[in-house]
Amino acid sequence: MSQTRRFHALGVTLAIAMLVAACATPGATTRPSTPAATAPASAPASAPASAPASAPASAPASAPASAPASAPASAPASVGTGDYHIGYSNAGGVGNGFREEQVCTAKAEALASGQVSEMTLFHENITGAAGQLTHIRDLIAADVDAIVFNPNDPAALNPALDEAEAAGIVTVSVDAYVTHEGTYNLYNNQILYAELGARWLFEHLGEGDHTVWYMRGLAGHPADSDRHIGFQNALAEFPNITVVPSAEGVHTGWDPGMTTDIANTFVNSTAYDEVDGIWTSGMDSQVVDVIKDSGKAFVPIVGADLGAFVAQLLDDENFPGLEGAAVTNTAAVGGAGVSLALKVLNGEAIDTAEDAPQPNTVLLTPVVAENVTDEGKATLESWQVDGLDPLWPLGLEIEGYTTYTPEEAVACEGPGGI
Image (cartoon, rainbow, N blue to C red; front, side):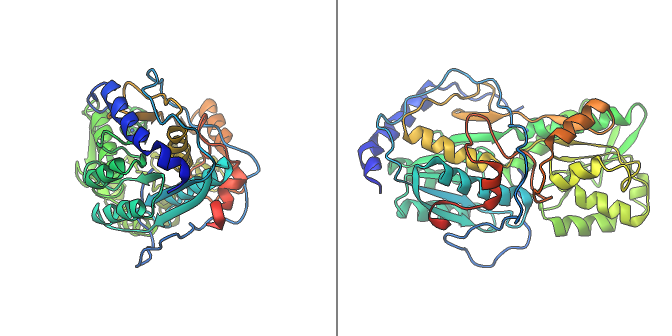
């Protein structure tokens, strides 16, 4: 434990208690992404994520945050010494662009902050909450000052988070939220994410009866569950839309290889000939490639702001007739989560959103852009980042939180060379 944390450990616990008391009870939920790709069999204790070799030439636009409520809360009174030990748990999606970028931004922010002397990182594919409970408890045993994690479950991690709180450790959940009242959430609004894309697709298809292929992410993950809520919210507004293969959709695991296999089976069957549109949960360019290779005509498709998909939407020569929309889902939550943890450790007040599903939440608002209007194309063009891995989301920065450069994010280096 750093000297600083010895002085403020009790302060963290008291501050979080005060914060929870000050926050309003969460209202009803009203918006990445965690694909499981090729996974290592064993858990690396401090393994760096793989990163693309080339660095982007320019930075994409910052991800907007929703209007914050008044700052909730007191935090530790002491200011950090630059000697913090940060723990990070990413328990799924190894090899997926969103998760790889998320881990790289976390490492980059820890290094760029100048406040982190050590980082312990878990980055592996595990099933459910059990393995991530072990991650969190191992990080507690490692005497970290803060734990940042992408949760595999909204509630099942609470026992370990209670233990972290009792030890005076700051905890920050990123991308999806947890119900633990002492944990901060930095939450991509996954419900709104799905609603925006689904509404665009349903409206674009127009009047008359239409059939949409509904592709989901990783079964059981909080972000997938929230996106399902958002998709169903939009679907309820359009009784002319029927979804296949069922109202529950088909899960891709957010795995590029699995997605390609599922798409090959579907597109090369007569089932594809009956659909008018496709909604994907961030596994999008793979589907477009399969349709192109099949020689069949494109139908309108919704995906995420991944580099490869946005490039396809803007490439009339190689993808003629492709109409679609991309919804932002920034992976910079990794870096922003580290920044949020440092702000709490340093006693800074945190602005949180009133309309979030849980208290203590910094809520990020997605936007949608399509390639069927000049305005939409201009927005898609503005998102592009030269040299970025095509499977990474284009939003590398979050205003007010991340301080690294895009080049530093792509370099994927953390304190101590991790």
